[in-house]
Image 1 (cartoon, rainbow, N blue to C red):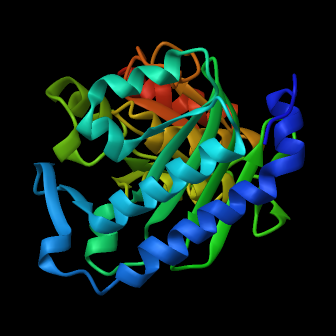
Image 2: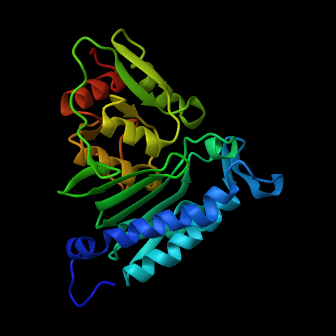
Length: 282
């Protein structure tokens, strides 16, 4: 528990292992027993056929909500499923209390289809700054972590994104067209140019991990939901990458960003992607 006037940095120095344990237990108890075993009544639609929720999402979020606020008294949780039920609860991201930002199953479509490309995302933020993140892909037994100023790690090994190789097409994971406005579609069309190889993204959390590992050069995403981005953005930053909106400013988890935005392996790549999204020549 946080004690006396302990800062978030001091809390993290003492309790990151316990957060990791909570993330792993949520997956072990509520997610993996349902993977490839979902019954029809355990899957529902939210906004449409591409926006799914399962009992694994709901129960893993409930587990994490209970566990995380016990670890950090006075904190609050902003979880994808709780916000779906009560949109006003999203405002806690802009509040005074430390906030756990939770996506219990990022990549629910992949999870429902029995694919391993899903993960659990947890980030700890305060006053709009993400201090720590956990990206756990339980079907692949991969855990990526980041603490601000202390680096990014995958299964204990330091991550360095590094710049893309010279002369290679930029590999860019982009928002699926189903989740973009007409204006955003036009912006994303700027990536369809020689020297760039865009493709539709899978799990946002795993795409961020791919950027941090140097397997993907950049993302170009068109939505702001903090549970999809907070953990991965810190992971990319701590691996040496950066993120920019079309105005050239860093992405804010508190919202009001100029979309689409990018997270990239290095600053030069981020600027190139942003210029293309803005309709400028590469």
